[in-house]
Structures are given as structure tokens and as C-alpha cells.
Length: 628
Ligand SMILES: Nc1ncnc2c1ncn2[C@@H]1O[C@H](COP(=O)(O)OP(=O)(O)OP(=O)(O)O)[C@@H](O)[C@H]1O
Image 1 (cartoon, rainbow, N blue to C red):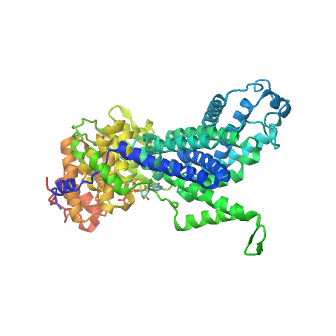
Image 2: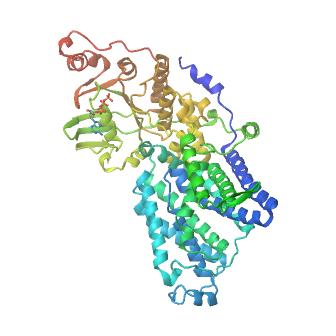
Image 3: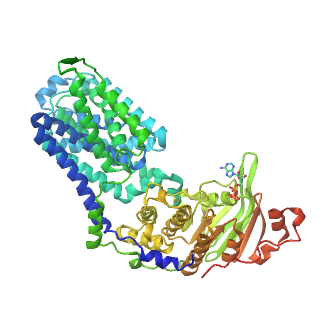
């Protein structure tokens, strides 16, 4: 293939509706499901149906709050029942009538007694309490990630439960707390569910949600785009915790009376079951999980106390609901790890095709061309990295020049990737300096490097595999400060630059190896880099793909003035693109110069071919033909 492939790809660019229109329609679909299920239950089963529907709507609201954190970060939280408890007790104390409060909590501290606030005021106060508690716990908790963060959320649940039992004069300990006005009717619960689902969806599709989903898929790659992973997690935790507290307040006003056990393992287990069964990663999955689990729980509760079928008495089997839920979770994890509703939001493809005709998204041609960017040289002096027992880079000094294509070659284990990992903050150098203009890179956090104009790809491709190709690039554009339609335009422009427009809606994990490498490059370009570090970009590509990549890289370097550092084992490819080549061997720089100088350099030949052939051979003297 030659560079004529790019226009062909353009011609096949898939038509999409404007993102705002698509999101509005998808959200409307999810809300319709909530509405139909709730109204249907209420209409079909009378008062029992109304009770179940109210409970279901509160569950949907709770799960939507939980999904804001767990769905986007991938960290399952066992702590959200604790937030709900906080909401129920706070609102309960602030709204309970003075008479009831005096007999229920005679020793209540004066500061908490006698408020008798209106429900909206009390629930608003609960929301603020939840926000404060989330901020407090988030700062400590979200240094952790994955399973350790999940365990820490379990700690929060246990601590809050113990405090609720211990603080008898405020909560009545393990005894029933009563007297809350039961204002959470079916209608109130339905509104609450709809609002929370909308918020969860809006957050998921916001730049915060997208950034957090990128962190979930690959934290290291996200940081190299300029995303502060910890901050993204804390924002989601605080919003999610505060909203769970609000839902807890309404839950309290649904129950009217409760004790700490209502907010402990049983509630936690059902919330997590709903999220895992429906699917952790989407709002549709969260809502679907509630519907499935509610249907299961309510059907099984009918038989839990025993029943008679055709004259045969079936004995009571207490706990059957929990056992069935446990089995369902195991089955889902085994057969469908992404949950019953998968990784995609609810959609109707035919409807979306129609919308694409009526509200077409601006195509990539409309995206503004990228101007050439003048960068600084990247100056490396005496850079050394030692691992125990091994010096990976040894006193390296050279300059990666702005606006030029520099090659970095060397046999396996020469220290090339280690160098890039130091430049982009993944490894701290043992000694030496790296300066970009006047900035000491050693003093910049990994997520701050991209903001300076330095981007990188990875030797082992690191895409956000559950995001679409478009989202992979969009998240980078947003991390670089572009917003809304401007970010979309940048993403489309970079997809077009790498010939990927036709694949914009595909999930990244479904692409071929070569296409994935190109998405990584497009993602880097969206951060508007001045220096781009490419770690074996052609590895795994066939000769046609390699030639096409070479043409694309040459065009990008020439048109945009980006300085490229090209690490490659394909020396023909390097010779064809690079005016200057640096050679490493066993962590040391052994040569640098033009391709012709490097090709005949004895130390280079020895490093590649062994001592015996040095002096008799040259390395790949003829540059590969790469179309311009
Ligand atoms: N995190 C690490 N811990 C320990 N050793 C490491 C680490 N990263 C790299 N090394 C070692 O440092 C040396 C240089 O590795 P590096 O990956 O930088 O080489 P490379 O030139 O990129 O090799 P290749 O071309 O095979 O990718 C190797 O011996 C490698 O095993």
C-alpha cells in the first residue's frame, strides 16, 4: 500500500451522528427503560407492585451513584452502603419532629437537636456531609488501586457500621431509629432514579469520565497523555459518594425506621451484585442489573417462606435468595465477565444510522489542519539508570533535536526503552539530567510531561482497550485542554492523519496489530506534541504497513515540525526516515551520525554482527524506499 491509501480510507469514513445528539438519544433510551419498567410494575401489580417499583427506583438511583465511581474506575466499592447510612441518619436527625427526637434520642448533643428541617434542606445537608466524608476518605483511599482499593472500601463500611452502633446517643446504636417522615413515594423515587441515571450517564461521557475510563484500562498510558490518574479517581469518588449519601437520605425516608444492619453486608452485596451482573462499565448495564436482580429477588422471596404446588408442600428455604444471587454472580463472571449487558450503552443501530443522516457529525475534513510547532531540543546529559545488578543506561549524553527525525538503535537490551521510560517519567534516573528547553524533566511528574509537549508510544502497545478508537484519541485531545466540539475535531483530524477514520467506532481491542500501533500514534498527535518518542512503531507490521507508516511519519514530521525519536530494529526503515542516528549497546552510546556514517562504523557493526565481521561489513547502507 502507498500513501494513496489515506484518501481511500477517507472515502469509507463511517457516518456518525453528532456526539451530543447520540448521547441524548442513548440516555433517553435508558431512561425510557427505567420509566417503562417502573410504571409497568406499578400498573400490573397494584400496591405490591408500587412497593417493589419504589424499592427498585431507589436501587437504580443507588447503583447509578455507585456506577459513577466503580463503573468508570473499575474499582468495586463495598463502601457505598456506608455513604447511604450516613445520608439516612443525617437526614433522619435533621428532620425528626422534636417530640419523637426527645424520646428516641434523649442524649442527643445540643448542636444536632431540634433542627426539624424541611426534607429538601435536610437531604441537601446530607449531600454535603457525604461530600465531606468522601473527600476525607478519598484522599487516603485513592492512593490505592485495584484490589487494595476495594479492600479499603470494605474497611470504610466496617468502620462506619461500628461507629453507628457505638454512637448510641446520636444513632440509638443497634436499635431501631424511627420517626422519619415517609416522603419517598413511588413518584419521588422515580424522579430520583431518573436524575441519578442521567447524572451517571453525563459523567461517564464527560471528559472526567472518559479520562477515568482510560486510567481504568491503562494507568501508565493515561499518565503519558497528561491525565492525573489520582485526581480523576478522587473526583469520581467524591461525586459518587455524595450522591450515594443523598440516595441514602431518600432511602431512609422510604423506610421510615431502620437500624445500622439495613446498611451493611446485605445491602452492599445486592448493590455489588446488581453492578456486576448487569455490567460494570456502562450505565445501561447498571440499570439492567437492578431490573434482573429485583426480578430475581422478588420472585425468590415468594418461595423463600415455603409454598404449596399441586398439593405438594415445599418447605421454607431461608437464604435461597442470597444463594441464588451468589450463583448468578458466579455464572456471569464465568460466562460473561463484562456483565449481561456488555461494554456498550443501550442503542438502536437503525435509529443511529437515521440520526447520522439528519444530524451528521462534522467529518475529518472539517477539522482544522495542524500548524507546525516549534519545540525545544531535548538535551540528555550523563543519564544513567541502574537496576540491582545491571546498568541499563550508562552515562548517556546526546541531543534529540526539535523538528528533526532522530533514530535510536541498538541490539536487544541496549537500553533504548529504559531511556524513553526515563524521559516520560516512568523510571527515575539514577543520575544525570534531562532538560527540555529550560525544564528539568526529572522534576516533573509523569502526567506533567505531555503538557510540556513530549509524547510517546510503547513497545508493547498500550491502548485503552475497552474504549473505541475515537475515544482513545479524544481522551488525549481533552487531556491537552481541548473541549467539546474542538476536542472532537482534533480527534477526527489525527485519526485521518493516520488513515484510521473508517475505524473510529471500533473498539480498540478489535483492531489488527498494525492499526493499534497507528492509534497509539494518533493518540500522541492529539496531545499536540513538539517531540514524539516512538518505541518500535513498526514492530509486528507487514512490509506494506511499514511503508505506509513511514510515509505518514515523514509527512507528520515535515508538515508539523515535530521532532521524532524513532526506536526501531528495522534498520532500513530507520535509514529511510532519519537524518541522524544514535546507537546504544549495553547501555552505552557507541556511535552517532548520519545513516552512512553509522552504516560503516566498526563499533556498530561489531555490536550487531560480532567482532569477527567488524571492518568487513556495513549495516543496511541502502535506505528503504518510502513514498513521500
Ligand atoms: N523495570 C526493569 N527492571 C529490571 N530490569 C529492567 C527493567 N527495565 C529494563 N530492564 C533491563 O534493562 C536492560 C535494558 O532494557 P531495555 O528494555 O531498555 O532495552 P531495549 O534496548 O529497549 O531492548 P529491546 O530492543 O529488546 O526492547 C535490559 O537488560 C532489561 O532487562
